[in-house]
Length: 169
Ligand SMILES: [Fe+2]
Image (cartoon, rainbow, N blue to C red; front, side, top):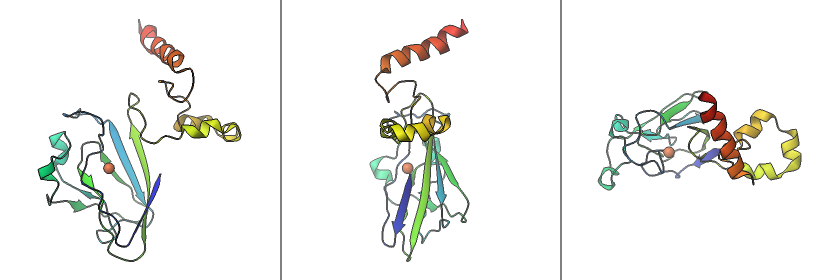
């Protein structure tokens, strides 16, 4: 997905991306967020802000931790990528200069979690599906092993479980 930030906009509240994952978060990554700022990201341009060391808490910030806890902007050059995992506390900056901050976002998750972005509506478009590559269809959810994108939900899940668990015996 993409986002555009204009002068005076911003200030997404402090949070960790491990939504719906109870604390303590696992030590391994469950979610990775990649942000590709098309014009680069600067503090005055509304760069995402992070709290150094916050990942070691392995939980979401508490209400009393939401104010002024030393956010620092992720400043990156045009063409660079900003990356953080599910446990890093971060917030959106405020753009104080003219122009726009355009960012392309990609979120990667463990196979056992439900994707955050839902593109499965595209699977209802026969022309789209016919022209899409197998890889693209996989990315938009055609092969989710929980079968959430199709009517064979239970059947697909049973097939998946048989193929992964029984074949190892
Ligand atoms: Fe986030």
